[in-house]
Length: 342
Image: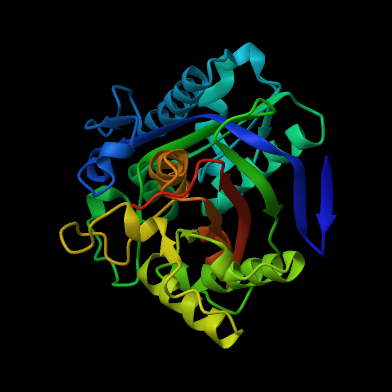
């Protein structure tokens, strides 16, 4: 059953359970601090395929297969799959999942896609439209650079505020069968435009959207930040994370000690040349479906607010003078395991 609380928060009662998860990562991500939590790490940028786009499709395929295996399910057990990526027409999703024969609902939320697909899949299960549903997203450094920035051969200088697109994917299988980790609430965000138009500073464009969604959720539910072990964004990076904390403090909420960001967790910024941190759908996807769910399953974390953030833009729109529109969707992850010391 789904019940709307306040303006934009959905309460799922009973909750929807995470039956299985899969996370894949590339070579650079495999050299970062979360390497041991990924199900698969690929040292070959092409993953044995002919193109980077095909490689990204394979990331999605492998993430879903891993999640299905952990859930003990087959593709035929899944009623709907919600998937998206950064590329035009979401081709990584369509070509990566075309052979699974699962009813497909393509999603585009830019880097907010992991939370968007999880929220949509959870709503379908809670509403009775599905017994089991899947959510998956991905990104690939090389395919994203080709579409959004410059050819890799160009070797352009990156600004200090720019972020590194993660090569990775994350997938979850959601269902009604009881499991240690569940989704209890979902808040779908509102588009936010504060006039940022610098494509090399996505964190500044997305932070206001995260503030709006988090504030909406807290207002809708009467929760306070201290009710949660972790408020996790993805992927604001260094610049956006600082802005988020400052803006939340001005709004009357102090999240300084509770907040972390997937873009800051997946890489070691002191040792890896990623400037302001990680980005891309696969950044939050691989971090949540790898590290965060492990911590919830172990009882190290008990309640996590996951806010994926996206920049709804295109190079064409920016060249025509448009601003970068931010979006953020929230998923409340709850663990039934007793809290433990980390």
